[in-house]
Image (cartoon, rainbow, N blue to C red; front, side, top):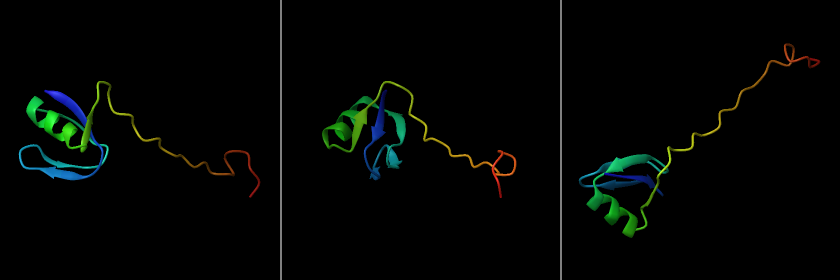
Length: 65
């Protein structure tokens, strides 16, 4: 099994539907085919999580409102 990251959204007959930037382990032959078609890239590390934004209440953060 090879871990790949989808470069865009696509569907594969055996591996299923992929969302853009989704990371998933697939069989070696599927991974090699998807990488060869420039639909995915091989990754070794865990996926980078998207940053979460937090908003602070200006009254509690010391702001004037």
